[in-house]
Length: 139
Image (cartoon, rainbow, N blue to C red; front, top):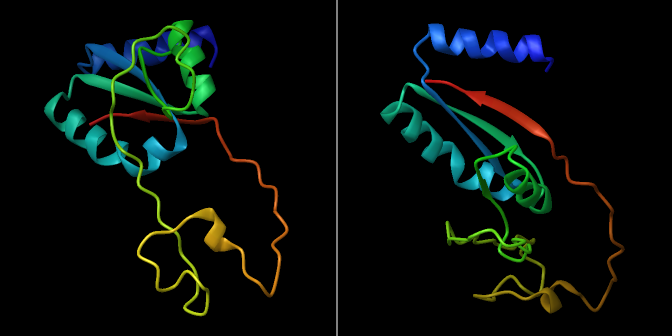
């Protein structure tokens, strides 16, 4: 956005009663699993505060908080916080899905070693995670 566009957005917010903006950057896992319901509840309870949510990879989230592009960030705990204070936000539970014929079908817990089958070997597909989504959320 250009400076003029940002000024117009700020004036529009002011005219509609918005008194504050929170710039929140988060990784994909947080954006898809946890934030939708929490942001909705926050916006309903605080209609005069706008949340600007930016989806990025965890390393970018840290840099955004460090350089002031974001007030707060949510990221994977394996990412070095580079001196920022960290607080546990949520646990990211992941599940494995496989066809009934797969050897892991009856297991209660799974490990990556279970993914290998004796009849075939997997060749990795390389896909780049899409990041850089922007949302401006209002009540």
